Image 1 (cartoon, helix red, strand yellow):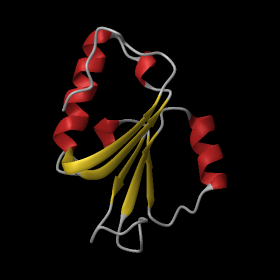
Image 2 (tube, rainbow, N blue to C red):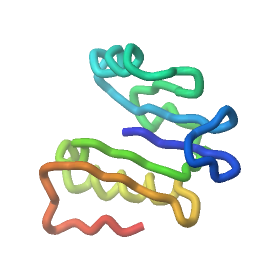
Image 3 (tube, rainbow, N blue to C red):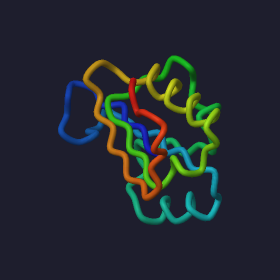
Image 4 (cartoon, rainbow, N blue to C red):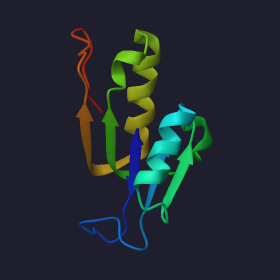
Length: 105
């Protein structure tokens, strides 16, 4: 899961923006660190490590939602929903939709 905090509406992160890269897997974090420019990236293992006042312009989740139980998924949508700014974009890529859940925030 990647959260992007962009300043001044840059098309890209720019020098004043930042990325929070949430990944519980040590192996996947190591691969990401090898492949990307890490200057403005904070790598954390869970959302619990992100200060509660941090908000985001963009959220990217890849192959993540099927890993949650229903109750955890509800909390996840609530947590993301309270951390995004009005008009934020969420790019969600997943292969297992939860038919009875709505991604509403």
